[in-house]
Amino acid sequence: MDDVVLEMKDIIKEFSGTRVLDNVSFRLRRGTVHALMGENGAGKSTLMKILNGIYSKTAGSILINGKEADIRSSKAAKRLGIAMIHQELSDFPDLSVSANMFMANEYLSFGLIDERQMNKHCREMFGRLGVDLDPKSKIRDLSVAETQMVEIAKAISVNADIIIMDEPTSAITEAEVKKLFSVIRDLRGEGRAIIYISHKIDEIFQISDEITVLRDGQFAGTNLAANFTHEKLVSMMVGRPLDHQFYKTNHEIGAVLLEVKNLKREGKFRDVSFQVRRGEILGVAGLMGAGRTEVVETIFGLAKKSGGEVFMEGHRVNIRSPKDAIRHGLAFVSEDRKLVGLNLKGAIRDNITLANLRNYCLGRVVIQGRRECEVVDSYIGKLRIKTENRNKLVENLSGGNQQKVILARWMSCRPKVLILDEPTRGIDVGAKAEIHRLMDDFAAEGNCIIMVSSELPEILGMSDRIVVMHEGGITAVIGREHATQENIMAAASGF
Ligand SMILES: Nc1ncnc2c1ncn2[C@@H]1O[C@H](COP(=O)(O)OP(=O)(O)OP(=O)(O)O)[C@@H](O)[C@H]1O
Ligand SMILES: [Mg+2]
Image (cartoon, rainbow, N blue to C red; front, side, top):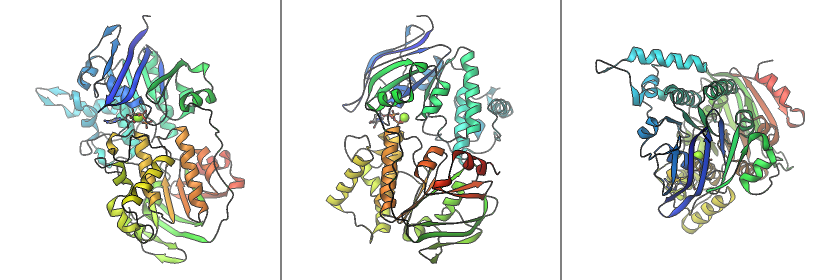
């Protein structure tokens, strides 16, 4: 068929003997958006990294426009008209936005990099995406969402025929997603082909023409998006039908565990007051930029407050660093998994029971030797972390499985207050349900959870009470029984 721009045939990939892609075939047509779906660790990113020349395949063939292609580097991929937005965000934090965007093809005039030209082109790209960013600012100073928009602009700017987007929307706002989708539709109209990876099933149905599903490294099926239903897609991914009810049990809500009074950070948020009780899950809803992450970071001592007080079990506590916070029984899973996150070069086992954390946790649970292995293995099992064993390096795990390791680490620390910022971002449907179950168990034991989430169904399904923020202030506190999508959205928009 002449509209096929890419064909991957019987691709096999092994990492030191372990097969992670087993005879996978994939066919992409010009002028279409093709979604690639599957659970965490199914092999999506690996297949795309092979196409982008980052990994070499163990066997199989790749045809571009019907011609066999040997793609041995990203440069070679680029020459063949392939661009990729990576799931892991940019690795060059000290570069400026524009330098990062044009890294591989800087503008040269008389042998010098033409910065003015670069900045100009950068602004044009941002204009198209509706991004308000200074090309001269440093990557390190951007939020996760902004970095993601830069990555998107970068991939679009190179005029590729095949654009791979590996979870491009995990951190951006709904308005930004809309703009991205309109750009994707333009690109499709120009005859380009887009491979779109996401765990957000609603998005998949909105944007894709075709869907291919991988399961455990194998091809599970391809069909037109119109021929799938939500249920059909999920069961093809996980190999069984999945109950998509949220897991929430009725348990006793006890005394106040954490209280925040008039917390304030200049320029970020003000007058933030709330209580969380034993057994309770407090949801924090709001639009991106409302100050939710800033509030929880401040409680955890990652940023300095400019006013207000925090109480633990009725006692005023002075938390000036994460170390103080941990000592008082708090734990924090951040939205940016690399920031407060992982030792990528370390094994899963060491990341879950990380030595310096162990010191703080001491007195609550002493994790040692065989017991340590048991704890680690139980989390690997409970969270379904896809790995051969507990000694695998975290950098070799899939994105979603890295997120699970962070969760396991903080839960194994047995905190009283667990703060979760976007806990299921990048997590597949099946594992999401497992995480929700663990959250419920954790609260049922008399602890509490503060959960920031941009996913309204998750907020509605898991929270006992919901704090809604808008532009740095709390606009509503809504009990579970009164919460609806509508009243949360209204409060989040400041009505
Ligand atoms: N460099 C590597 N060395 C060893 N194993 C690897 C390496 N890269 C990936 N893997 C393994 O290959 C499997 C597939 O990983 P991949 O990143 O492709 O999953 P994914 O489908 O993108 O998942 P996610 O939705 O979590 O991003 C995983 O089990 C992962 O641990
Ligand atoms: Mg991936």
